[in-house]
Structure formats: C-alpha cells, structure tokens
Picture 1 (cartoon, rainbow, N blue to C red):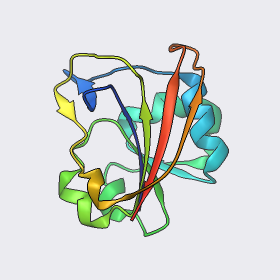
Picture 2 (picture 1 turned 90 degrees about the vertical axis):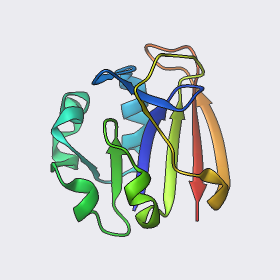
Picture 3 (picture 1 turned 60 degrees about the horizontal axis):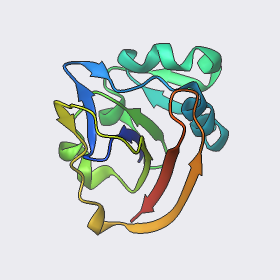
Picture 4 (picture 1 turned 180 degrees about the vertical axis):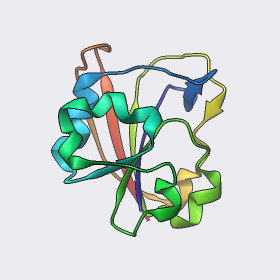
Length: 132
C-alpha cells in the first residue's frame, strides 16, 4: 500500500489528537495524483470536495490492498511497515509540537522525487516520494 502522511521537520504528525494543519492545497495535490484515497473518519472533513473519490473506513490500513493510497494522520504506522511499499511524505518545513510521529524507516526505501508548492496555510510544502 501507499501511505500519504503530513509531518513537520521532526516527523511529528499529530499533537494531542489535533492535526498540525488542514491545508486545502495539499489535499488538492494528493487528489491530483490519486484516483481514490482511503481514510478514516478523522480525516473525512479534509476531503469534502472529493467525497466521490474517498473511501472512509476505520480499518482502512488493515483492509488496504497493495495498490491503495491511504492518507494517514492519527495512526502509528510502525505496525504496518511491512505492508507499505510507497510513501508520499508532505513536509510542512516547520517545527510543531507533536505526540504522534512518523516512525517508518525511510532508509528501506528509494527516494523517487521531491516537489515544492505553496499551500494555503504554509508558504512552502514539500512532497517527497519514496518507494520500495
């Protein structure tokens, strides 16, 4: 499966059950490269413009097939590391407090590309793609 994750410079994903950002342009970017995205209900409000292309399932990581793209905000991905074949990492280029971190070891992956774009809440967002 492919996971899409948002993180700060210290790989923080979430702080006290609050997302670090809700950048609309980031969601637009993800949807420009994905036919369908799997999420849980925590992320549902971010995808209101794409309800026809989003599947909401509380067990989406357990149920994900090899080619599925899963947007993950509030789940520790370490238990799923063996299932992850590709990572789309959106970096905020800032330091935020966090209680949940992205801990998948990217040294097991090949760096594919890096793209920067302006978000609506951040002047620079970096999208990095890694593949096994």
